[in-house]
Length: 304
Length: 240
Image: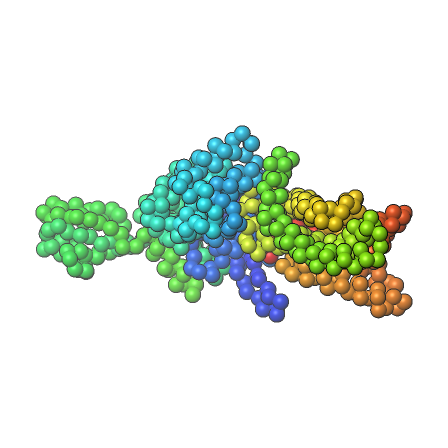
């Protein structure tokens, strides 16, 4: 579906200074995958997305969507895109803006109103529909941005910091919406600072830093299992003595909670079984860091 | 971008023009025209028969304000979307940039003509009837000549109107100060044909024959820039 081949991008100022924003970036994203892009500020995420949309030309390398130049693909098919900054003419009314985007998305005239109503309902914009864009709060504006990306059943969705400015209720709702959009014909790319979000939503996540692809991390439990030593926090309702016998190297972090390191999930389960047979009551077992978080720390640490 | 998209989106573009530019064009035109019309009306009424005053006055008004209204109408067509970041959602849809902005350009002309009709109506009401042919032709020709050039600049800079003023101003100055200089005889073929606008306006008001080669040069110059702008939009990435 999407192919970056040795893509590089250098910004040059008129004074001759140059900044290498993306460097030798190669990656293939197959159809149907939910793919995450993570990286610290200034890592090159937005530049990569700009190149993928054809809003920026790479200084070297090529980008293809279904074998086509990005602009050729988008002009032919359109995509769903939510930018990090939701920039819509401030004078437009929310529902009118969505109607305009529906018209430009080539939704047949008779279906425009239905499509707009559907996204307004999905994104809970009913009470804000008649407000001008400038009158919307940051969260509501973000929802309008997301709504215009979901007007059509697109084969490609690119969401740049999609939960930026959303409250916890709508962050959760957004995750449900994206979960519902998973389909074999649809590829989704989500760029986010929020590793927990990417861990929940994406199949794989590219970690980039200093414009370079540092690594691609799988987020499934299989990947979790093969990721090496894992750190968990265990809360006990009772049985501290039994716990220290089973996990002699555990570190107490107070209030009946302990941190343990296990080589893999099988070892964790075996030890927990032993603990419960010994009579301890376990209240919670939570990974202190997801595999993604762990890999992110390693990758960004290595590259800086 | 197919015909259905273009036709369905046209009313929105026209509405945007009327809000974003139309009001500015209306007020600027009204202010400038008023500053010319009233003293001009008093002065001309004392010198000539009442029936020729409206035509003579309209000559002055058209000469003074059409170019300014065209610059207000045509500036920033591409640059404003780029600066505001509005291009992001617009061009994630199946829309071709050159087609979108070519339609935008023509909508600006239609919007300008609509506002000019309001101004002309006020002129007819306050001064007297003059056929609208000459002002309308001058607006259309000026729009293609000046607007085409400003459209080209707009594809790569926010200072489109400033570049236009410099280019057309340089052309007018060079023609006035160095009309016989050897370099000007060459440069005049490259610089904007400012003088052709004056010639055309004079010929139209006098009802004399039009210099069609000059007319073609004037409109062709602007159209050449307009099409060059479309090529830039096709080849250059909009966020660069």
